[in-house]
Image (cartoon, rainbow, N blue to C red; front, side, top):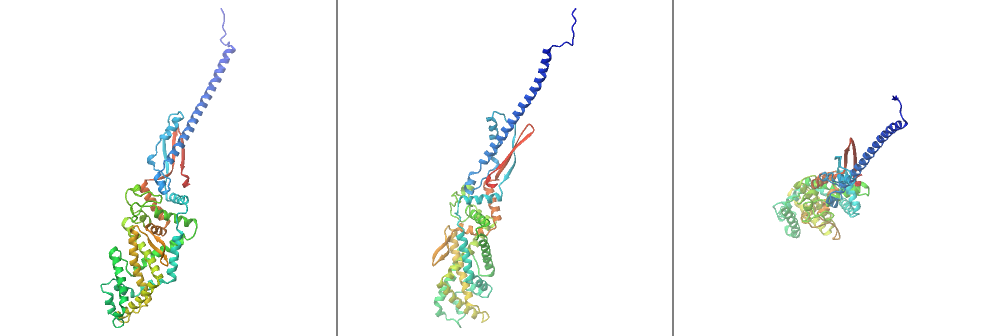
Length: 453
C-alpha cells in the first residue's frame, strides 16, 4: 500500500494560489479605478451640463426689455432642466441627477443704474443736456440781475397785490376803477391805457375760464413758484459739471423722461428706440409722471402741470421784460394803478409803480403760460428762450419731463422706474445658481451677466 503525504505540495499549486491572490487585488484596484474614472467622467459631464444649462438660461433674456430699456434680465418662469438632460444624453449618460435652482440674483436698482449708464454709453452723446442746463442757468442769472424775483416778492407782500387782483379779476370794469380816482385821473385821457388793462383782464380771465387752472397772485402761490425755481437751481448745480455723478444724473433723468409712457404725449408715442408703449402694456399709463413725482394718476399729472406752468411763467416773464415796448406799457399802467390805489385807500397805501408793473407782468405771464400749457399738452412745442424774437429753445412735453426728472433725486427715479419695469415684465433676474446631486455629492455653478459685475 502506497502511503500519501498530505503535506506534499507541487510548485504549480503554489503559483496558482499566488497568482489568484495577486489578480484579485489587481482586479479590485482596477475596478476601483474604473469606478472612479466613471464617476469622474459623470461628474465632468454634470458640470458641463450645468454650464450649458446656465448659459441657455442667460441667453433666454427678455428681448423687448433689452431692445427698449437696454436691460439684460430673465424670469424664472421659463427655467427648466431640458438642456441639462440633453447635454448628459449627448455623452451617452442617463440622467441620474436632479437639477434645481439654489438661488437667483434679482434685478436691483443698482443693476438698473449700471444698465442705464451702459445704455447711453452705447447710444453715444445723443442726450443733449448741456444746452438745457446752460439755458436755464442763464435765465436765472438774467432774472436775478434785473431784480425781477425780488420785486415780485415785494409786490406780493404789499397791499397792492390785493388791489391789482381785484382790478384784473373782479367784476368792476377798469373804467369803473379809474372812476373811483376821478379826482386825480381823467377817464377820457386814459382811453388807450384802459384798453391795455382791459386786454390784460380779458386775457387772464379767458385763460382761467378755458383751462380751469387758476394761479392767483397771492403770497402762497408765489412761494410755490419759488419752490419750483429752488428745485430747478439745485438741479442745475448738480449737473453743471462733467463728473461721473453728474453724467449719471443726466443719463437717468433722460432715461426716465423719454423711455417710459406718459399721459400727454400724442397717440402712438414711443420709446427712444421707437417701440410703442401699447405693445408693452396695452394701454396708456402715467408712468413718467409717477416716476418723477411719486404720485399715481391724477395727482401725478396735476403736480407735473403745476411745475410746467411755473416754468412757463418764469420764461414768459423774462421774455416780456426783454421787450422794451411791453415793459414801458407796464410801467405806464403801473403808474395809473398806483394812483388808483392811493385814491381808493384815501392816501394810506402808496406803492411804487415799478412794483405794480412787475405784478402786471406776472399776470400777463400767467395768461401766456396757460396758452403755452394747452399747446404742450396737445403735443406741440412752445418757445422757452428767444433772442430778438427768434426762437432759440423750444420745449415739448418730454423736455419738461426731462427737466423735472433732473429736479428729482436719483434714488427716487431708480426706485420708481424699477417698480414700473417689474410691473410690465415680471420679477426679473440677472444671474442664477444651479445645483445637481449625484451619489451624495453636490455639483454647482453660478453665473450672471457681465453688465452687472
